[in-house]
Length: 78
Image 1: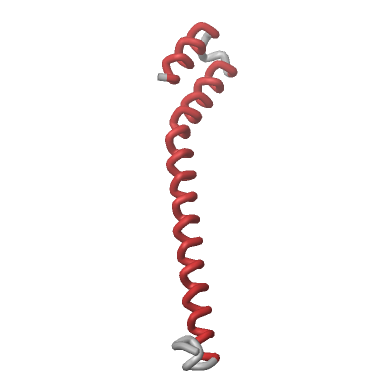
Image 2 (image 1 turned 90 degrees about the vertical axis):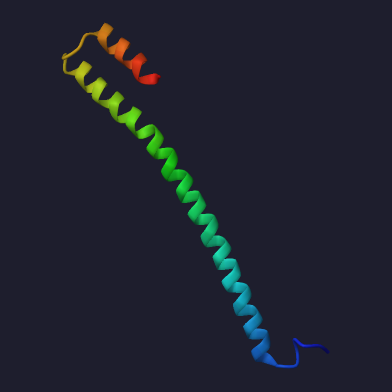
């Protein structure tokens, strides 16, 4: 019948365990890649978002005029 059935149930269990480990490793790698992409995407926008938040707060508190706010907001986009 072949090599798979020569060892009996232990051979079948070992094959199943190896397959489960391989699937788990693939899932782990995919999860790590997705998390890395999310991390890098969030960090690229965070400096703009925090700067814009500070600018909005300064305008809301009346520290800067509308013209200054608009000019600074445009400057942050580039």
